[in-house]
Length: 450
Image (tube, rainbow, N blue to C red; front, side, top):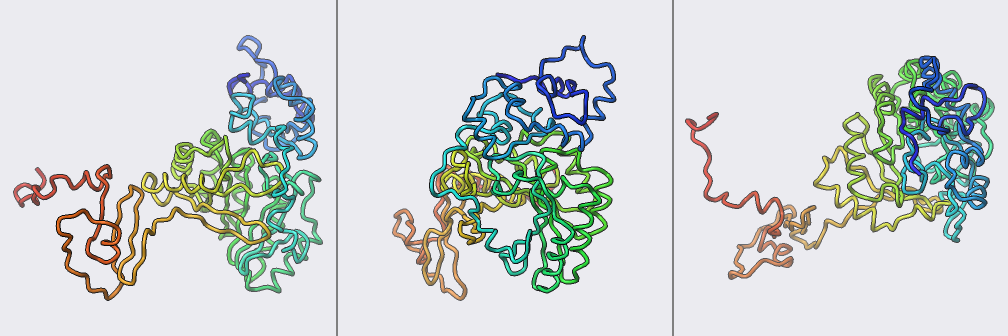
């Protein structure tokens, strides 16, 4: 079914801010101009209050089914019971079609296919719990540590890698555990970079988050603090002036967010990113490759262009982790490599993330690239560019032999030996650019500027 427009959805706000949303609420019956609530300013104020958004998250299957009658029954409910569900009214308002073809719906709404459970999927595929020397702190890489500030998110993404903790109980880092984490950081001066994650740390109040940030910043050996959050995507009204003022006191602060689809680049989301960037906070983005959501190179090209345009640097394109409930989202590794090859040459390097697999068994992140090395010899390495052009790159102190191919076309062996310098496909832009180049001459002084 087609849902109403975003504007319609937002004017159908529930009346009681302390109650969860109802079937007549954000995504309930259509509201015509003749039946609009009288005080639109009050309603807009509610909508823009991030605390109201959190209080009114869609949490129960009955609410969801009332909004989307076409949903499946028991199996979808079982998926919601197995993996917690929460959707902010704002993010739900971005849904256009109530089925898995909609990229917002697919990421936020439980589906029966989440119950598919092949043996390769695990509760903790990255084995973070094994690298947790004190509660809520993961130390895997020598110079970095991860602090899990909360188990709460405003939206529980269906592809979440921390389903074992996120939303199971909505708790936050206790004062005692914060002391333990800070003591560990202080006793390990090799840790220079601390990532605050969760759950989503920006679901905490500003004062609660500041206690964590200030305690970590007080550790002399910690140079950089990063915050991992999806609030600019699913709860952009959380990025308030008060929050930004607090964060800028603790520079250098970096924020990595999590846009997966161009539809998430709403004016509200981009305004939230702008407020952070204007405060001098560098923004990165970690996209997860999801089948049926963004496994189309043109979709990702649009996303990455939009992010860079709004001062968000595409940082990682992650292969979906081997966590339970995500088999329907997983793509072959070859799909990610194919997408990266498409992007190279079409996007500035500034807009191209690193395609990465966070390997099972705690193996850490492994970048995957298309293979641009065709052949290697002691004298030359043959490289392939994004258009298929082959180039012989000479190694240092190599005497290049005289080129004499006897009129035959060059082959890769000629490039590897240095007898030829390049092979260019006729369809390549480089080839078209050189058509007629021999007949052109540099302009004379008199010709310049004419």
